[in-house]
Image (tube, rainbow, N blue to C red; front, side):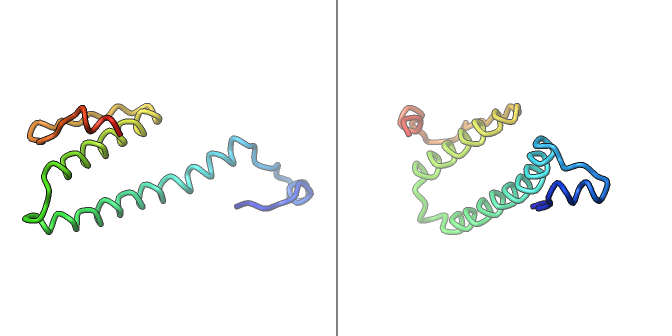
Length: 99
């Protein structure tokens, strides 16, 4: 984080960053790191797929549905429309949306 006093900027001939510039810099620093953390979490979750024969299909279908809904919700906050199709899922959509 940039920690400088107004005097420092005056002496160096530059002006302090605006609040908008500070927010943009913070976003540019945090967003990629959070995306990478999310991607890593999904890769870790993939490890559960290795126990395929022990898996409860209804539980995993419901989990992926809820994850997809969360992705849609967050993407929409960035003005991005994401669509998912669940043609082969053994899922009671009414029960999954009650969370």
